[in-house]
Structures are given as C-alpha cells and as structure tokens.
Length: 51
Image 1: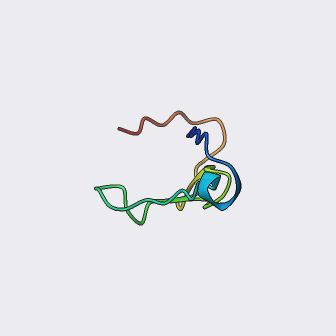
Image 2: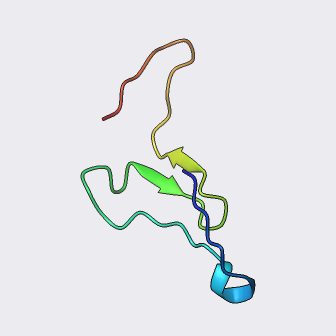
C-alpha cells in the first residue's frame, strides 16, 4: 500500500484503515505505515492466492 499527500504538517499525515469488504477481519493494516498483515497463520513453503 502506498499513499502520497503533498500537504505539510498535520494536513499531510496519512492514516491507513480497512473500511470493509469480504476480507474484513482476515487482514489488518498498520495505521501509519500501511503495512498489511494477515490475521491467519500460513504454512511455510506453501503458496496462497488472495483475491
């Protein structure tokens, strides 16, 4: 996830969130970095497809 805001100071702060959708509860997003995490554990060496 990538975002850009040309404003400076408090007006330039970006807060990430997941508002809804079929994936709600399956993922979480860090509010300041935008890093997306899975709420489910995955097995090492397996491939997964998410749409």
